Image (tube, rainbow, N blue to C red; front, side):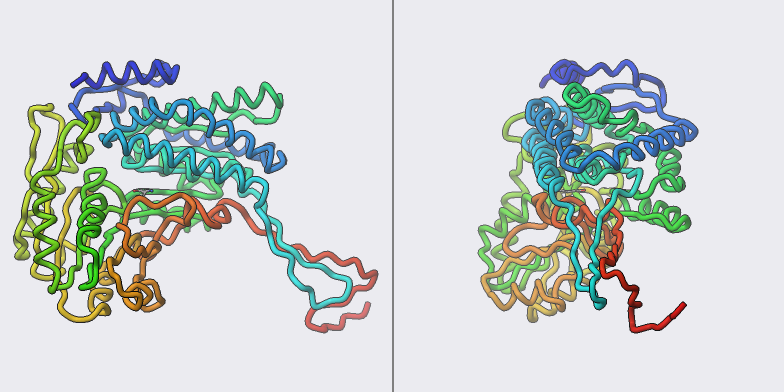
Length: 510
Ligand code: UN1
């Protein structure tokens, strides 16, 4: 296996990226696949962060007046560069976040997809025309940029989640300031570098269109994120991460009556009904539960299976779990890479201990492949048979743990179990019954932002709005009309009548 440092040098060369300007002693970045130190970086101070936000605000004041389709042209160029550098950027994601190669590449594809979507959107951004009660009047809605959009992203989707926010925010006329996870700043530096290149290309054709500081990066930890949350200059703060982080950020943003888009924890379940195609279900469960080593916010964490099919399904799953390829994420054939770090491993072990204490029977979950490095944390994914949905199942543990409970009654019993947790991101049902599927998607069904039928909980396309309810935070990103979160709506009433009739028939003669 090639040492991660060597891989990094190749990737940096392919991206024409020099890290020297970022070097320092504040953050040590390790490759999860072998524990090798990739880089040591300097953090921004809160004072520097404040200056960055001010600069972004000045950029917004110019960018907001650039026609939206022209703004789209910049995002089109970013998409072009991402297409050209997909292999290298995807590999960097694998190196820094520990994702298997195909998922690293898939994440860059997700960026390309949202760029395409945003370019189309840049010729739309349309409001309604509304019937006026007054003669000679017209009412309409106009959508305008908000200002500076702050983006806080997590280690597990180090580039795609930024791009959902960045591509939309830019075509919507905002400036962006990004604080990536302190575990994955290298991928962020690479994205910022590609965007700067897109800007340079664009400026050659349209000199003077892109203001200085339109897109900026903040490397650092909580104190830097706190500046984004507290600054009234940050009109929208889009934050992805834990419920704990989201709660802190949301309170700060609410205090100044700002706008937050929150995409927080998921504790996603799948219901398998008696009519489900078990072969298909087993494959979907495996990808959703162990893909990305269980470190997606959409990861399947709870399996609610009807007693009549439980033994057959679990026999299949146990076979898969025993043999699934855990190892170097850059090696062909690997399906499960490492956890991000030791803290993730410890949290997983604590959850498994609690599950045992609550009567669970654990298959897997132990550390494996220690030969790959003392600082590399690989685990065999855990399948945990629980006697009932107990406390450990009510929280999200960011690791490949799949808890299984059985239900004996109707689909409503399963739906109630599914909804009985504080989070509400993603959910799925496997069934051949139209009635069960429709019930699951109805108002009395899944309470999540994503409710799938005969598909797992993870791996959403960018065309749909992405996000969830309850402790997941209520925000929506990516497709559908999520762009409205990055714009403000003005209602315009235009009078061409030559008279001045008042609404609601009010008389006010002067
Ligand atoms: C996340 O884990 O924060 O639906 C995002 C999915 C991916 C995005 C996950 N498209 O699993």
